[in-house]
Image (cartoon, rainbow, N blue to C red; front, top):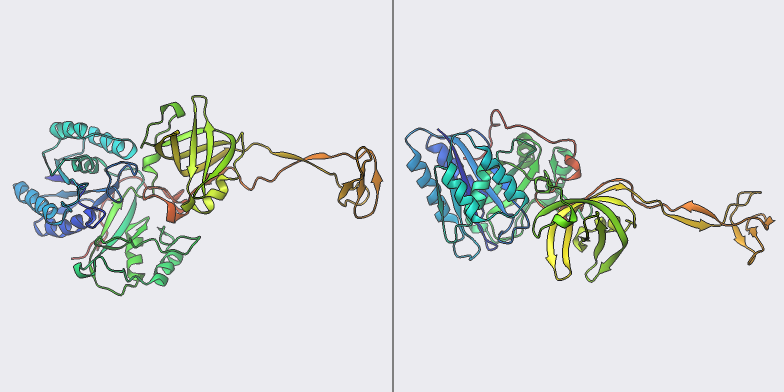
Length: 438
């Protein structure tokens, strides 16, 4: 029996982690005779959802399970959620969905909708009733949305891998003891890994800061690359367990839908093509705002201070530039604003200025001799009344192409430069060994 187990919303800002529940279940289900047909899938959902906890990630475990053991497998999953979910948090509302057999197109579409839009619980419940074997939910039941989306997120298109290591309980909430230089060595020696270190600041990006059980997570193009990275990373504390996940991180999966300005909706990740209007503004906090128009309307775009040098690029835009921008849409008192996650300069307006010509005698710089009196060469003294200012193109400091914030300011789903041209398709025929501890 092919069984898909979707799990979501077990964590909170104070602790917990749905991937940790999944890692525990990997060992439990294998011990019960289940064979995994895919790595645990880690699906990052719409990062703008108002009810998300931390990374807005859901999990699906896909196994071939022995016939007749359905009740036992489901009990193991429910017990794991009830033992490790952060029920004391008002915003933690776990959900588990069980689906048997092939994943129908309706659930795949639902996954895309959850990653790229805002979806409501009623739609999830309707699809569960139509397609799924069973589901369990706690509190306000909202976790069913992410759990069902995880079942539908079969990752047949672009995908990456993340190896997550977990801390022993007594270390949780304390400073993580990850050797920083060993992480920087991974970035330099394993080109198939990505976003381990921020190139602008040298900041190590693999270790979270909160009290959750994750020690670190290293991202890469293949299971082999993240396993090799784990062997290189040095830590000064014990690792309780580890597991490799296949994921939509680093794929831009949330930015797949193109909109016109008039069709923008709050909290929807959106991609828009338009023309820059006017000059950028720098507001309190160092945030940079500019406006684009596309014929259906105009919208402000924002590059926030934490995006570092990305703001410098934004400030080089000029009126008349054609750009494609992508990010989440936020509703403000002034209307909608698109929070920039990616900027593509499609074509750049030519900017010109009037300058004194070079000296026709020696090529030196010239200067004015007064109104109507022509120009004089500063170098050789040549004078000529007929010389007048000429136009020249102003260097823009920006070229057509794609521009991104630095990794420290990127979302989980943002595709880094390093991944362009490395997109993957299909699902694994077999799993690398080993792919988890235990």
